[in-house]
Length: 486
Ligand code: GLU
Image (cartoon, rainbow, N blue to C red; front, side, top):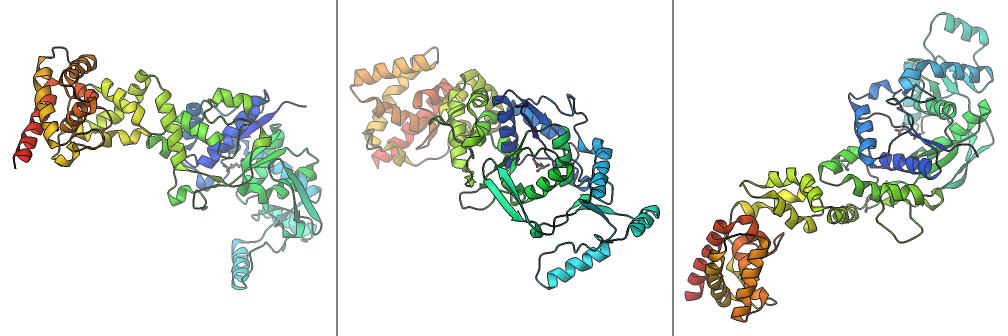
């Protein structure tokens, strides 16, 4: 078998739709698993849709994800150039060849005529189809029009009858009636090829063996096949990927506000978690393993385990993956990536390393960090009910008593570390003959003012420092004293 060559062929729109990133990932993995080549090709023939800086977004994304391409605009390769606008003159001769062999024809219809035709179809409730007005033009008329410089497009001539069948690795054999296929435009009036045409020409010229794309392109596949056949070229292996839907079954769409890759990063999802999640969004391994590094995927990925039923993009599941990756990180690494978020949440000067250590096991996505840290800035007024905890066996009275007992012990501590706090408090607990929770619960409540905190009493006390911890505990004692008296 010849070398496997896959390509990621994005149109530079300025953001990467997650479905698009999944296509890139599967292309990349198919190349790697087969020891082949992964090619990046920029499909920018739709000049009206060009977005400044959009190609950089593509490079950055591939780079961040670790999907290094083997050939592409920035690194070159044997089939350069890899940007379609730089290949502009490549396509017209191929379209002309199809005209010569009777598989395509010039169309000189004006915009006005086509608009009128579209209007007519609409008013009759039919879907618009080009009416092949220019299909039978006499050769002299075509020549005269071309001589006169009349604007034209070149259209693919679909067979009048019969069916076209193509094979897809995921969806199997699919047949369509040729009479349902429109004479699509191959070369536009600005001389640029359409996406559909350039895509086929380049896949062939770049010796692409596997074409991976979203299932929204399934309906175009027969038209591609007819083009390959018209040229006598070998059809690549088609791998159409299942639609990505939301849990309610609706389609994911950036326009409707659904997250792009960049949005997910901004929300504090980790690249590794997103890649891992996308790998499993439509593909399943032979084992029950869920956590995969890219390197592991490069060994086990296989096209025959891609599913054709729609893949549900479940943000809750993605959060789970993210939390797993966060938990598995070295504390120093987590501190580094969490730092901007910690700083966002802190209004006071506190040590960030212990804060990172405290929140690491309890963080699903980084953007929740600032919201978790407010209690470190100020102690809000809180309800004394929090002191009453059945399981901890605490009530207002013993909370007051235990807080009073802990104050002198804390005052004594010289080196305010987690270890010294732990040793002193537990020594006191032992001496008093109470349960750990009967001390730790009131302390945690007093220092945080919250029923749920991102860390335990000792972690929080260590972060707040001696003075602030004692200040907060004294506030607790004061309020409990007043409550118990009345
Ligand atoms: N340029 C197309 C897109 O961005 C590529 C589709 C394909 O992979 O063939 O959607």
